[in-house]
Image (cartoon, rainbow, N blue to C red):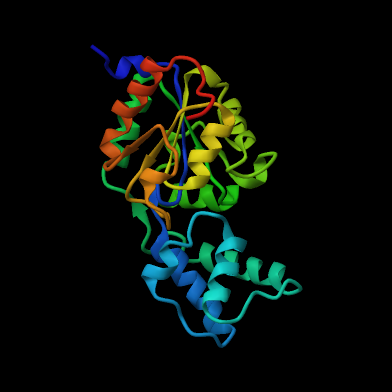
Length: 237
């Protein structure tokens, strides 16, 4: 019978936004603050929620386009920095871990798994968020896009996160919520799990993950299933 002990020494890489933490409320609030400063109308929460997860610049580009004013390339860097400043000021006003996250991370850590965050969010923003929602103690490293050779869906991002905790690629799993996570896992040659409650515009079942789960509480079982049935790195679906 498979148990949590099967995850001793395994490496589990987690996406952040939409996987560990429901960050959409504060990201939407920060985006709408910037739009207001630029005399543009605010965007509905449900529309912006699906834009989250690809980094600050991508969110601004999509947000400005949706507001009817494509982001000006010349002024983009200053707007991105202003957005980051606004977001840092409210990084966890409304954001919180998804149900089951703290319980599962506690169990995985106790079982001897190596836990790492692999996110397209900038590392310093990720660390600030994890600190604010009391998740930092669970992770051995946080690898944002700025610390990787290239951001997800590039497999080198996932590989860099696993290497950061001295993990074994043959005993690693990527947990995420979007196509970038599914492709990042596939491109790194590790199995990938997607949660159905995150941020994606496409049906999560169509994104190419090895498994789709509907509750964070199912993370351990999914990891055990993939690591015991497919002990060698996954090279594609």
